[in-house]
Image 1 (spheres, rainbow, N blue to C red):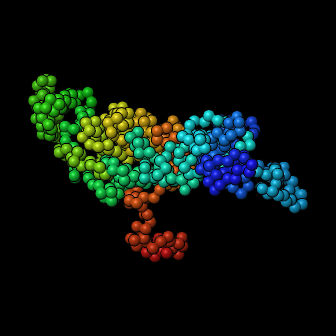
Image 2 (tube, rainbow, N blue to C red):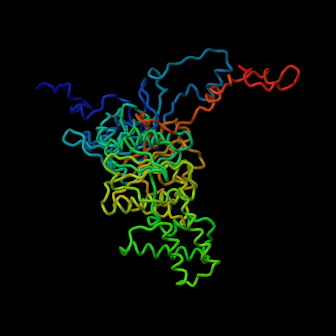
Image 3 (cartoon, rainbow, N blue to C red):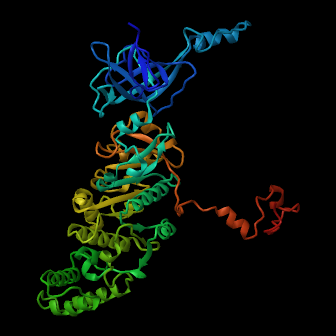
Length: 547
């Protein structure tokens, strides 16, 4: 009987004829056996000459059953590569330098003692079922020494990572840093479990926020952005959205605030004083009237009048208490963001983008605005009056620090905890995770971590999922626009390094070229040292005599 001849759609592995779709093409090397490999935690393989792999890259390691048949491919993540060359050990190198004899030897691929050794971490197993690749599982089969290691196909990597195969089926954020041909597309549901974008100044975090904004817009998700630095103003226009400012197109009714919001906004009111008690009590009275349907809103003037009515109830009608309380509350009229309620229901239609330009706001006011917006969206989402909406906040360490007393921290903590059940997602960006409330931070389950200072890394412990130590150590050295992507099983199965794709909208967070501004204003360029001081030793005071 004639032997089976494989067709173009088949491949032979150790004499076994398999469909080509089951066997990756490029052979990288073979598994070696030593005191550390192979195990379920680490596999080492000798790298074939003239091929290369890089840290973070994925490889496919064959795993066989007891009968020797191919059972699965174990996907491994490369941790490190090092060369073994006994000709270049310290003693050999010293002898070559001391003795006047030319030393030559065969290189890798011809030498029997020179090779490269790759350490990799098994992360997922792709079983071969009925001559096809099945659904990924945890590692169940131990790769054996001598087993082949191949470069996996793109679909094997995306399947093992939990990424949709089609970039249009999710949030297409870029490509793997180790292989730019493999797209990184996060499942749309990741944003329901909230997103963290973190990185130092100039690392690319606001750029990543813009890419995510584009992807959410493509899916029709309404977005509300608290823009602290004005970085999304132009992008909002390009996405067909609106830019509003507190007091200019956007206001909050006094009744939408909480007692703590109002006390936070009042200047010169000390906690525990009669003035604070009188104002807070009166505010609660008016809030109860809203809850009882006796009124729909109330203004600053209404609150001032009600203070006069409630002062006798608390026996606080003395001028030293009543008059200062009324004066402090009247000062709220100067808060530009107090006014009619913004039409969230009419505005937050599919694809909407509302950018609230908060540049120049005092920190106390920024926190009040953020808390009120978050609470409004939470209530509307809970009652299904708006579709699923994403609330994004730039520099969110300013509004959600680790302070239980702040209303903004309390509201964001609750949304992070149960917001996905109310159809409200968070996208929070910060350069200072060490200052962020830990309860909020740990509930942001998809994370884009750009290069960041080592002192900030400590605050991120616990959010790196299965990122190996080698990947975490590389964080401070990542180039701009590259980040570590981590998540949970439902969002990103395994940590990887991502090159963020290019934006189509304008990036408003770029660092300005301040030196071009100086040239436009008449400075001709860097002056010669000899031109700074005249020959007589006197400063010439000139501006335009340099070159």
